[in-house]
Length: 348
Ligand SMILES: Cc1ncc(COP(=O)(O)O)c(C=O)c1O
Image 1 (cartoon, rainbow, N blue to C red):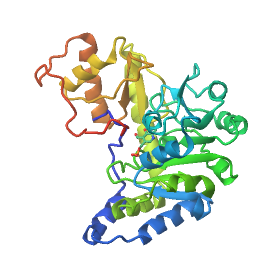
Image 2 (image 1 turned 120 degrees about the horizontal axis):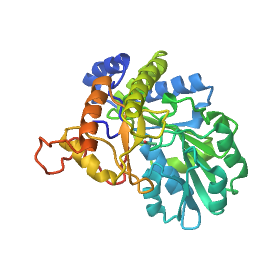
Image 3 (image 1 turned 180 degrees about the horizontal axis):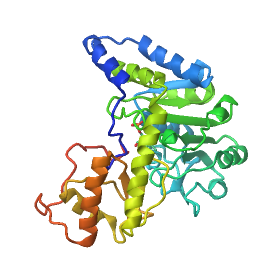
């Protein structure tokens, strides 16, 4: 399952322990676990507690940011290709969607975004970007923030930040700029199924998100997130493992003459030299589930970096599919990944 940018390592051992130990208390709300998570993150980041809202994942605050800051008169400005959850939600707010091509180095083209969105309500910057895995410099994001139209907000989605060398935009939040930073525990922390995510912004902006509702955190998600933040080795170790497996996969692709976008994250775009849908279906026939296609790059499929054995399986299947020698052992009907059953606007 290298299709949804999940982390095959799952939660760290202290997070697993926390989940198991809490199971008997699953009948309780135990709000203090969310308060402890808030305190832990704010102390680590030097943030005031009122600058953080905690959610069961980052999808909710992403949706609420779109609802709160875009409208039929305030557009939603995003990169193309980019992560589409906000774009889909802007249908609900009635906002004009402005898609702006990435630069040649696959960074957000902040000057073009500013030019295309004089009526912007929200600029969405995914750093590193999903699906390209590429970085936009902090100085470019700062330029966007300093030059954006009055009343607009910059939403910086840092879902994949810790796999890369990108710099966080949290200092701009601390400086009370019109910036919302999203973080998730679904990626490097391996907690996509446990659920926890953050919106970090000054209180006036968070109020707009809070308007759309808050909910109790699952106690397992809150406790596992706190345990993960307290594990000082987690980020450097997982970043190293991911970088090594990604690099080995890139070397294999190079040796075999395939091209890809050099990514700094736990996923990358590979060029399959024809409409990618057929390759995705053929890979599923080999029991290897790879990621989806973006309309701006129809010949590319997004591949998540799995474990070494998973990537070896990917290589074997990919070569066969690309050489046209694959024999589907699952009959000829395209297979669906049996674990995926998502509403259209729930994306990874
Ligand atoms: C860029 C980006 N932002 C946000 C999300 C939402 O993740 P979650 O709701 O699991 O935090 C994803 C999921 O893959 C993502 O890729």
